[in-house]
Image (tube, one colour):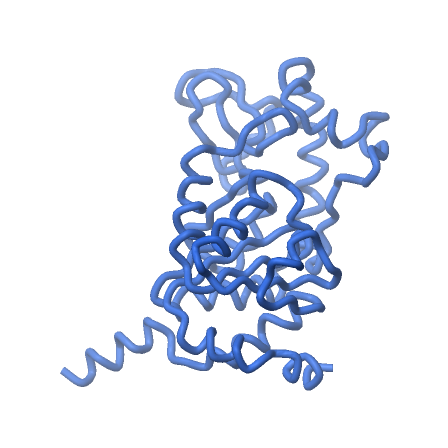
Length: 266
């Protein structure tokens, strides 16, 4: 199977990867699904939590009406996500941050698996399930290390109630995070869109920005998506299978290793 995938990597994609200096990556639910993380959406407005569809329990309105129930839902989600581990796709992307001169990773996922794999400065377009944010002063708390079990948690800075630090239905993406992703998309040589159907806006605008600015656009997804028609390359398969193979194509010392070699030569 790996040999077939390697043969599917075109000569022009190989050349682009070998010469790329600025790489931008957008990941979606498909990458996390390979680690066993469910989408939680249920699909088609399916009932997923105490008779409420995903779009209701994960909404800004519910934060106002029943914050305690929102926390119960997100605690349930965290208990599932906690069992997941980074897969080869996460690990390859973590390595690439030290391979290319400029590398930006933006994700629609909220599970924190990219960070767990070692990725730094990830642009979390939809927030992260392992953080809480104060409704009054916007102070944040890391629930992996500072969760007292109190629900809803109380802010240590101002005493206000805290909510999950994720983007809910009826809310906008964090402005600065999206702006950073947009800048990286417009300036990249190669843009990867991995494990996302590319239908959730405004995140789906990012690969379009990259393409319009002249980037080489690559999609990795088991199925065709609305984005496929504008991609220069569409690789059909699991990200955990394909990214390690693309990593072999890159086949260059990491930026860190290059620095160490230069220091030894002095």
